[in-house]
Length: 354
Image (cartoon, rainbow, N blue to C red; front, side, top):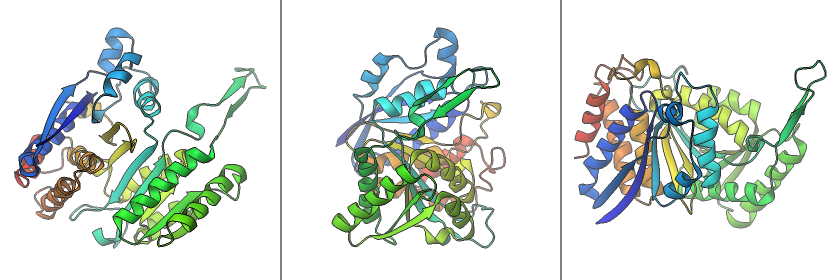
């Protein structure tokens, strides 16, 4: 039996509730696939910050780095200034553990409403691969004469060839493994961001021409991509993009797949420790009411299995979510409108795997 050591970060608001259902599903399938999970929970989040004034101590990075993976509920507390927890926990983990890929499937399941007229599950099924540790989010830049009429602020989009190339190679490998349309679309804004854009465009072409000749190469400016994701999402297979643009278009992706309740993501280090999470946030107003949708957390658990090398088990989670939604018993992706509670949705999906 294969054992995995998983660090749990339940976090804030409804994070612990949805994470509990994700764990429930993992434990339901474990015997069937010869897997054992050893879970250990950590209390990083808003309540700890309020109590101690610390977000993520350096010692925690070393400790979390010893696990096979991290499974996150949500980070965000109404009594903590926005950005404190996000920067101090999420971004700190991404950079410290070199989780340089943000992986975001955009998949429409049956009986899930999308705002796109006449689009069906077969039309919305693509993956966005976002570079996760470089670009403008590194914080390079500064400000001077702050608070005066002459104030100046700069934030730099900085990329090196190695950082760009490892992301693009991951995207090509993912496209090859996915083996759906075998098309990798680079999204950037090279007509305006001529220096970083040129680096991404040249690397995309050179790597593809040399090592992935069977993969079709395509390119969209980011503004055009937002239009095509709405008009013709069926065009896309795998998208690769830099950090800022990826952050923007993945939220659009979440909406066209039915909302934050079904959107899962992974922060991946292919050779190290990765972290998986529902992307909908902590939703504190629903805390403790048993009404929040846990499907994104369940899907995030499936993604974690895939990155851990358990592709059959990961496919089983995806199939169970598909069956649960195809049944029509789950009425909506919105909190309080699902037709069953948080724990009941988890029980339902788990029953399809046991």
